Length: 117
Image 1: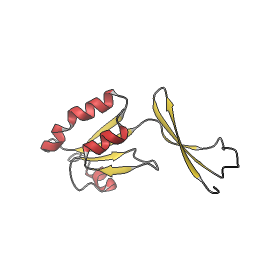
Image 2: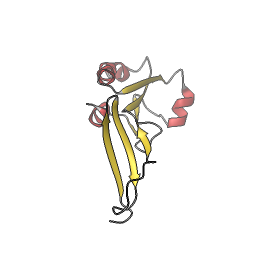
Image 3: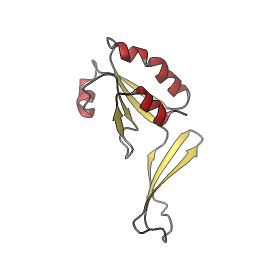
Image 4: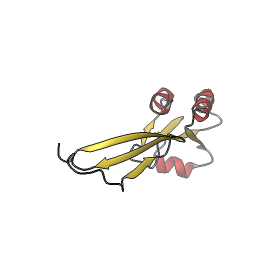
């Protein structure tokens, strides 16, 4: 098929590497494919007063132990980041921020399903 977009996920020693490769099937794969993500990455927007945020902390620690990069952002201390990412409820998770695979969710089970190992 012409104009086929293929997504190739290659496991690397440090985690998951994703490459987006575009082109026709009859053309060789170009070596200048752009990396999308080195390993799974999650921005977790939380607050100390948020009960649900406190309950998901053990899950985030387990994901981090399995190789997922977790950046926990205190929404009270970083309202600028909340505005940038359109955070309106807590906890909220941005999966693979800054990549073509970026996705926002408030469901920790979706996070585990997408980036868990």
